[in-house]
Image (cartoon, rainbow, N blue to C red):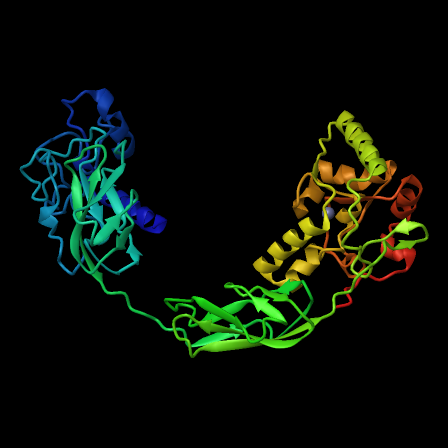
Length: 459
Ligand SMILES: [Zn+2]
């Protein structure tokens, strides 16, 4: 669209160079103040003009080329060849710019819109589909090029404020664009709305053939329907054994009991088009106790917490956090807590929502399964912003450099995903106490390296 506008401007400029500019010039008898803008682009009236455009109102065109068409009311882009719009129908309420030109008064450039041209004067759309003619208002220098669009039959086609025409029902109607500046200046589009062509689903592809989930957890295969232009990509999901796994209407599969079953998705459009996934539901690892290694409470993908463990925010960690926030503030660094203690149930909600958005594999990179989140210990805090870019802000850098001084460790640094089990989280700090935090900071180790432990889900 932008290109078209540039092209139109270029054409206009070329025509002006070719000598048509006289049509835009205000006759010398007019107030010179009003013509100053034109004078800038077309040469001042005082300077000799090789094309003789200096003011003779009855011979405005280039001498020797009297038949050169004038610009303002002649669409630069030719009208639609389907012929639905006769250019002679183009409005010319002022009479200032007649295509015949020669014996008409010259085009008066007074800052107002004089004509509208479109790149098409007829559109054919299917029900529910849209098209948008490109509008050019003349002259280019008009101050208010606002458009007012109307449809003479919104049961057939609607049009929005910027000219997007949408088919509503089969039939024909007319859509009109008027100048907001000069409502008598308009252009009309003939609209034909045809029946919607239905494209049927022919194939369904899932991103995995097998889903492995512990009881109570979930996964969601990603569905692609072909052709991707299919009209109705609705999905119907079904589990052949809901005692093993259930599936909801958008494909989120939840493990219910240990065993294997099949989950199938059908196309709503063509129910014979299906795809299936094998679901293996395993026992859920349970932790009856909190794990301490070398006296350090450990939570990662290997070491979970009991569902009942619900200590709330740790008071020592909270005091250290407040000291850190106050110290940062003195240096002009504003830190705040986005998320602190999270219960098992809250983590279940959070994790499930991520899985239902991107599937289990993606969710497991950045969200802990319930029972495996450090937030359930009350010792971990997410600061300021859940955004990788936070690590590059003054606040994120301050946190990485100074949080150890207050007993915190940056738990999930860049390039340690294979060790911690979680992707880079520049916002997540875990309270360890000053001595250990200092040791980790100085050695550059994460907790797993320091303790020589893994971080991997069992199931
Ligand atoms: Zn966190």
